[in-house]
Image 1 (tube, rainbow, N blue to C red):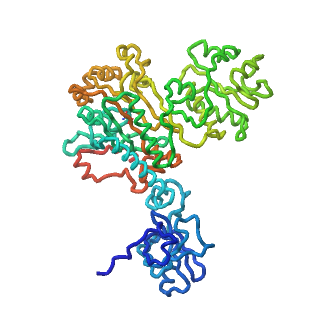
Image 2: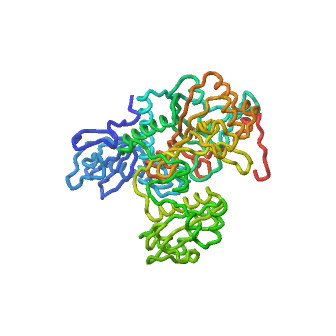
Image 3: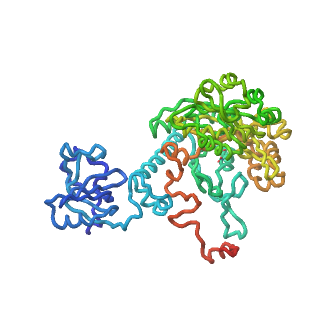
Amino acid sequence: MEEAFMQRTVTCGELRGCDDGKTVILNGWVDRNRNHGAIHFINLRDRYGKTQIVVDDDSSKELEEIASQLRNEYCIAVKGKVRKRPDEMVNKDMSTGEVEVKAEKIDILSKCQVLPFQIEDETNAKEDLRLKYRFLDLRSKGMQDRIRLRHEVIKAIREYFYKTDFYEIETPTLVKSTPEGARDFLVPSRIYPGKFFALPQSPQLYKQILMVSGFDKYFQIARCYRDEDPRGDRQLEFTQLDVEMSYVKRDDVLALMEDLFGYVFKNVVNVELPKAFRRITYNDAMEKYGTDKPDLRFDLEIKDGTELANASSFPLFKSAVSGNGTVRYIVAPKNEKKDFTRKYLAELEESAKVYGADALYFIKVENGTISGGISKFFQGLDKKVIEKTGAKDGDVILFVANNNWKKCLTSLGAVRNKLGSDLDLIKEGYAFCWIIDFPLFEYNEDEGHWEAAHHMFSMPQAEYIDTLEEDPGKVKGDLYDLVLNGYELASGSIRIHDVELQKRVFRICNFSDEEAEKRFGFLLDCFRYGAPPHGGIAPGIDRLCMILANMNSIREVIAFPKNTAAMSPMDDSPSFVEEKQLDELSLEIRHNDEN
Ligand code: ASP
């Protein structure tokens, strides 16, 4: 039987000087075809690298003709002899740069149409075009490297858990719709018209049930689905490493994660992480960095401005501190990147206003004195202001005053982040920290009731358990977040395993006992059958890979992401379906005039 095609004997990344003289077959894509007179230099590319193919001027006419037909991204097979390149022609940038292959036969396996964009190491084509032709975009070196990195991360995670005696257990993707924080994706049931499955927002309840069933060390690389509006760098579906363990306390979970991340970073990027990560309480994180996900690659801390506000004659500050308000400041250091011009100060103010600040007040420090902005309210207090803030000549002190503690701090947190990047303060590397002692509940102003800050299955800290209902806002949870370089990388908690306590938390979150039984009856039921104490965590894989790949968007580390408008330009999903499919599901689409 005749061969279907010349099948490769080597990849495009493996030939070296020692292969000199061998006859080989390569398969791959034409990365570049340059011709110097009758000589063609063809760079052939596959997942493993690039190899230079030469069609010499002593080649047959047929071979020369085929070589002249080759266009970028044609998929070809080449048979030829490996030969060493002369010393001065060795290409140090290519792993195969010592050699080239003198072609004897070239077959075109398939042609390529005119390309929508060139496949380069990093293309600068518009993202939607890249996503429409993702199959081409994925051929670029950047995407190939990132998909490989993601594979390495997942491989290292699995290795770690297998060697530490965890079971990998799959949980269903068609589950009961339960309120877990975000909106559920619903899947209509054909067999039970009018009934729906939901896609899991996370395997949360199932992993807890697995603990009750005795699988005391569980992990899963789990796909999670949340039907949220397109906003920032979100995906409708994302991947998390889901972990749960029985008979553990908070510190056991934190230690496991420190060890896991140590293993992953060592194995994937050869970086040695500290054995333990810094721990910061939620309150301290807010006070110092104005966020519960601080970027610790730079210092710049927020400071308490109460004393200065009291000393000043600025009515707005005075009334803030005498009431329930908060005054905080940050010292922006003199630097070479940015002058603190009126325009730049206005930009900083804008970033504060996004988080609810009414204004960003400033004082400049020059020649040992204070000037500009609100300095007139600090008359005669130059020394005090300079000493208290530690500001040096050329620095600017930036204040926010607000009746709402969180608004005041998050506004300054945004200013801190902007200064960090604008002033080039961010050091290279990986800065991990734990945020602990979060409030268990948050007040939902719109709906007028308390809700869980993380999710409703998290344990209150022991000292608050007896008095939960008295002041839910004061209750701290046994909750923890892992933060890396200013991103929330993981959230987790020790869970409630007692029916009565779980019901009390449901009640505080506005679920009557009846409603709770209806929605979460299966969880409450399983807690009635000897539930062990347990806890867990779930790091986001997309974000982890994004940070390791030094990218700003998780779309860069997902093979087939949705775009920023929450659709897929490649397959055009979501799409309309056939009337017949709707009929089978007993569904009817309500068309409004615009449809
Ligand atoms: N299920 C939680 C989440 O997806 C994580 C956890 O508590 O383990 O955020």
